[in-house]
Image (cartoon, rainbow, N blue to C red; front, side, top):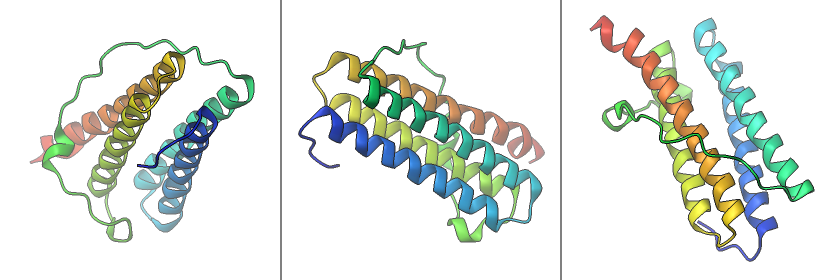
Length: 152
């Protein structure tokens, strides 16, 4: 990860990471013919847009308050799955595996960003965003458990 010199650089990096996630999920949604897969990617793109807007507001208004809700359950399903490359996704299970891994990566990014600043309010904000990404991952893991693992 990059070395940051100030809060704006950290926020710009996080904002760009969220935009990258929005673009990633929208591009995948455009490429699939599976309606369930498209829906999950569009939903995720919209959730990442909310994160980007939150970060842009923080940068503009310099208000860092965001309370932590608590620890998120980790089913660790993504620890035992391997996602296909985006170009190879052709069913709902593939989409869920990719989404779980993407959200796990986003969780790690925000955890690193939280640990990279001495600003306690900014640390709290990034910890909250990490928590939201963990919740996204949990949502996909529960869906995977319900619709993929239970079928086997």
